[in-house]
Image (cartoon, rainbow, N blue to C red; front, side, top):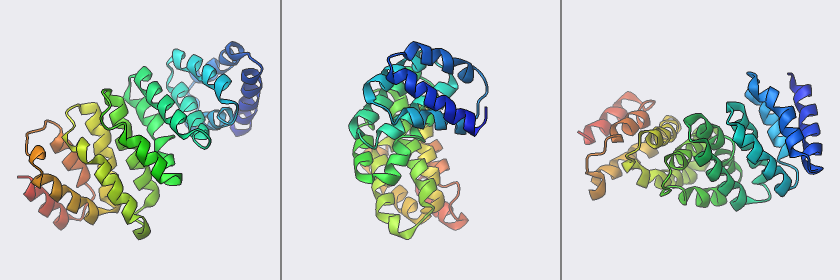
Length: 248
């Protein structure tokens, strides 16, 4: 499949879904998902579907989710990214539900890099509010999404000084998750801290120093070392040494 074929398939699927034929659309899409189709082409299909009416498209996405293919989560996440433009809370809630249904790291990461991450770039305050509600979710994959979204934002920000206030807000967002006890969720948080630490090392170093002094951070947490290691990975050597010494 090439780019043009992906666009054409997206158009056909959109027609079928809008005309009340989601099963036929699912049958047409499944062979594509069964192959090793590049994610960039699946993104094209998903983004096209996401422009259509919410109800029929969401019913179709449910059928895609049932198939539980790796590429299917890309389609779903890209469609939700498009839906976010007109339905902020609905798109976020559906992303949360699909992450729980998928119950795997690659689906969570696919969703995180396609909906909440880009949402932080284009609509920071609404996205920040949505992510804040996910920090205390009982599902580890939902908590992982928070870190993945922060990673995506930091990768796009690339250390721009004008975005310092947003970087600080995201560090505060992650603060409660520095006590994360689930490994899968902690890896996502560490990913976010690693990319923030790469582009905003001074901000992250100051934030880490504050974590040391908080009473509830003094408890031994099995995955805090992992998150600390990731957060300091790309820091200048001297700054990294200063931060790590505070945690000894």
